[in-house]
Image (cartoon, rainbow, N blue to C red; front, side, top):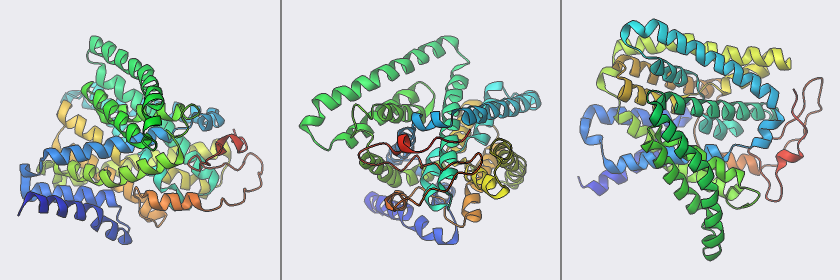
Length: 424
């Protein structure tokens, strides 16, 4: 069979079959991951293709570029104190899990860095997926606001922690990497402004391609620093969002839609490629048992902490608090990325690697089962939800108030600025 036929068959298989299987409540990312594992079992090292690696890189980079574009600091400031409380609890939880992993794994050679990465892999929600499914989970406006805000805040914390942990083993390297990141934060706005001044006027409509180009360059820089692609792509998206007033078209609704479409095409290749990297020893009964055990311990803890936090802070009823908690459950992207880093840099056992993958699969499947909707990155459906007229705002009662979703953006103004203040 020719190489062209193989690639075309792969594109069809990853873009069509997983969508068709969603009718059975199987999330498309998990299907793509399973296809990669099957390919690894049948074809072994022949699946390690350079073109596939680049397609996967485009997928993970565009997904975190989109996540950075979704950050709205004004919206985060509206819920500042509840979010700070959430981050404090998240930090304490991460520290506690890190200490447990380091304390009980010291006899097996587990360093504190490996324990910290394990904690991040277990506790960090996948913001890109969560944001894209909110419109189809049946959450009300206020629940969507808090799910989005907490997911973004948690991701910001996780990216900072990831950078510190991966660079902490070499103080000199950490100083160099920090200087490069600071230079990126200063240089990216200047680069965007320069492109907007000298390139965009000569090529109208080129904002999307320039945004993706800068995102990929930033992702490659952070990858070379040893902190993976996602950090640089996220920073590029965040900088573009912060320049929205000066360059409105850069982070416009049309560009957000375009980045969603771009990610929708390439993200399946990332999951397939991740599946081809799963070692055969990770598919053992021991890994299955450990994965189920981790899920039974960690997942109720994560859901319960968020549920209890909302009950105590907001006085919400049981159902609303539980819906927000369950929507924040999926960790697929961070677990896949960090499990790979743990295996490559810290040589974790294949059994633990397989257990982490099973944990990620089960918590990603949870919203599909509870909310009766497939969990996937599907921008077309999300944008159809955004195009619908907004429902009438509920009348505030007690400590509650209506909140406009972060993702809903108008072409003439930012709806966040026009929405009533969040409750505290």
